[in-house]
Amino acid sequence: MLRSMFSSISGLRSHQTMMDTTGNNIANVNTAGFKSSQTLFQDTLSQLLQGAAAPNGQQGGTNPAQVGLGTRVAGINTNFGQGAAQTTGRATDLMISGDGFFVVDNGNEQLYTRAGSFSFDAQGRLVTTDGSLVQGWGAVNGVADVNGPLGALTLPIGVLMQPQASTTVTMGGNLPADSTSTNPVTTAIEVYDAQGNARTVTIAYTRVSATQWDVQVTDGATVVNSTLDFTAGGTTPTPATLAVGGLTIDMTAMTGYAGTSTAAALDQDGAAVGTLSSFGVGPDGALVGVFSNGRREVLGQLALATFANPGGLEKAGGSAYRASVNSGNVQVGVPGDGRGTLAGGMLEMSNVDLAQEFTNLIIAQRGFQANSRVITASDEILQDLVNMKR
Image 1 (cartoon, rainbow, N blue to C red):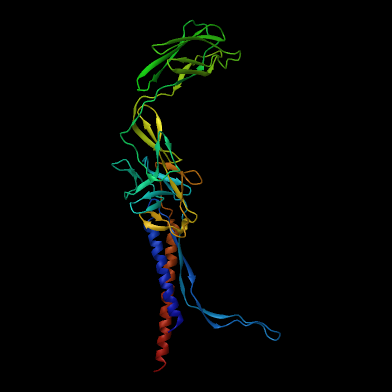
Image 2: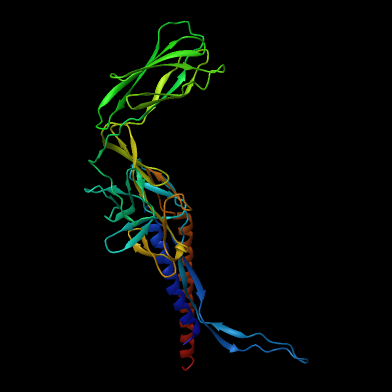
């Protein structure tokens, strides 16, 4: 039989594989986190008809004469280029901007994915669309141990934030040095004890001179009086702090310039008991809860995985991958630490380029047709050879 017929058969098989790969790419054009693939060809062994000859003094050298025996698929490479971003508005939809994979556990093995369409199940665990558990580190008192073992990332629904006793009240703003009013400038702020009970602290400033103000601080049970003295420049009040009822009143940020009165209580470090009202995921992967008492606390930390050779990962279905002997060992860490960052309310779409895929479709089709034509021509030659006997 003619070698061309067998070569063309190998060409048909290779171009069929290219068609299959291209068809799969087009089918997943709207699959979140999908990475397109590319088929690579290479020639097979060649039959040596005449070996090479070295030149000598009387005759030049000759090149080898070889006939190729067809083609085969050298490999199917995955393109891990960044896909386009699609805004969804869902707080649990996450997109990786840069390198890295989400780590998920399907109950049998640890897999890796770029598809960030997540949701919370009835137990408050962050899961993928097929129920795999998204991995990360839980937080204790707002701190996540990223050096510990991975586990399911859980939102503590229904858990109360314990009350926190106030220890410091921070004051700020300006006391007008040119004021002529004898009425005190008064401001108040709520503080909390260890049981979460609230009480009001009131601070009243009465002008004595351009650089001095009498200060009266009361928490309803204790009254403390002092004199606030500014330097000639209107900054650095003395004393810088006052103590009342176990609280430290910090006045280092206050000024005594001429002009508007803006003195106010800026902040205090206590909190009443709170319930979880909402949550969000930051670019660094921190799962932050917002509580009814106005406080925010880190509830967990999302993990990202990287590999020395992402192209060596095996596709495991469901837009997930598993490690292989050629992907390298998995390196797990927090986003932004040599890895990509996260964007909430967005999904990474497929990186399939339809224009390129349709071009590949035409190339595969024409390649298949050309190889079919060679088989037809080889058959006609064989038919002519058989007819020579007649």
